[in-house]
Length: 104
Image 1 (tube, one colour):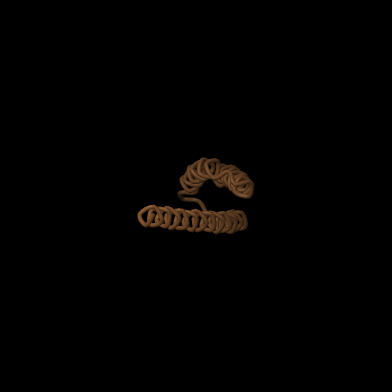
Image 2: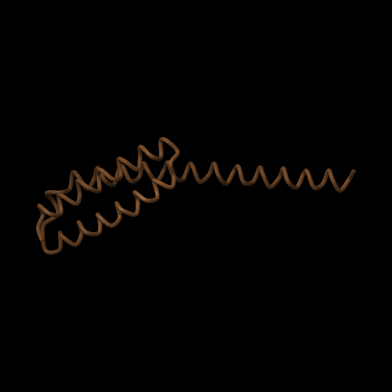
């Protein structure tokens, strides 16, 4: 266990979150979910590697990872809000159609 091994995991996590951002940009939300799970696993392994070691050499990469993950989270929240809005509109449409049918 070492900071070198942790660095390898960090680079993998950065690659995975970047791939997830690209998938989000393409609307591939199932792929985003898969990549997020893998990124979390790699990040946990990185933390395990750092037990007893100084994490400061990895700080710039950790900050990049955090920023990219925050951006991914913002994209996911926006997508969630779009889905919720579409669901509400669909529900209102069905209610309107039922009301019309009941009055005809």
